[in-house]
Length: 157
Image (cartoon, rainbow, N blue to C red; front, side, top):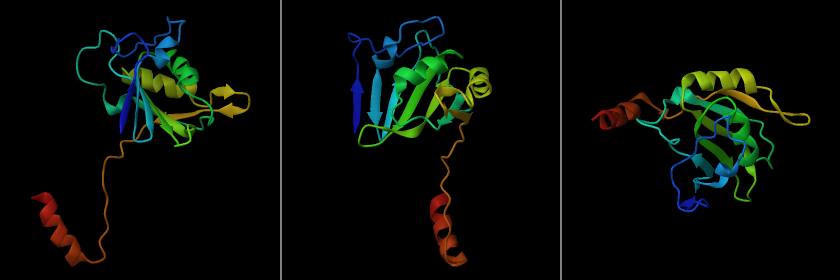
């Protein structure tokens, strides 16, 4: 199920939370909740072309369970424009302690790892920021070589 929230008078243009913005209302302007993820963003204003590559995404973990976009997005947007922010959520409304930030450029993603890994978000609580790994491959093991050969022919066409 997908739910789209928009509290910004019908403006669905995404957001461009650059360091020049002192107003963090964009954090609630457009977000979508889907499959246990709360997603904020979309193409920043003026964006032309396809979405940024997977290399532009960082993995953020050790997020306090009661920490949300209103704290995270302003921190990451100091590095550069954010294309999309995804926070993994529990059914009870707390976050799962990790999420992903996709920047508009590879350079900003690398800079965020350098600048924000071990960032103290709250007293004694430090974020871990690393390169996101593309996990879209499905690996399967078969009990015997014969079973594997039967399935391999069907998958490869």
